[in-house]
Image (cartoon, rainbow, N blue to C red; front, top):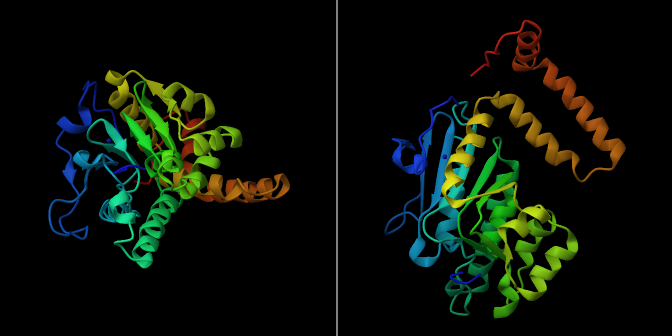
Length: 291
């Protein structure tokens, strides 16, 4: 809590997300304050790459950073051209969490409330977003930065990454990060992280369910893009329906969950792409999705 990137492109190797000529999102889609935006966003072949771009401040989730990230997520979210989002970061720290300089008594309680409310809205937006959101982590993710990783649908990290919720050590318990963390890892693991502030390694995070996959640093972009391309090759309406239903059924009792998902299966079959996929399978051909 310290200050606090479809179709096959071929094997591009390391730096694919940065080297390829991604189309910038349309100018003016984000509110701009003084100075450069703390995030950047590019999109190509259905994959949007949002980069936390304030490494000098350890990509702290300042109010400006949160609003910029929120705007990048919301930009043309319903567009059929958007299939998946990758959130990555510049520098050795994925995100150090909230900017503690914004949380001193020099700022009003209303300002503090805006910071935490905006952060909560961003985390909930990731879950309610119509396309999958992937965290690509290469380095340290602490406090609200760890919360961001936990909130993403998929999280891929390098083996050098680590994760912590160290707010307790500076007198500010990670209560909001605990919401995402406690819904991602076992309770006792979450509480040890919250009570001690001690970091866990990428391999420990994988073991406990915070991460989907851990790879060597030099394979991180390649593996993340591979996953994103696979998702982007599927039908967006089908994936979107499936994501929404997955989260909707999670808190339900078993009977209600099966009732909801059974109805969703009926709705899915009725989709144009649902019928196209079934017919393509039976006819032994590749499906042609509606996009």
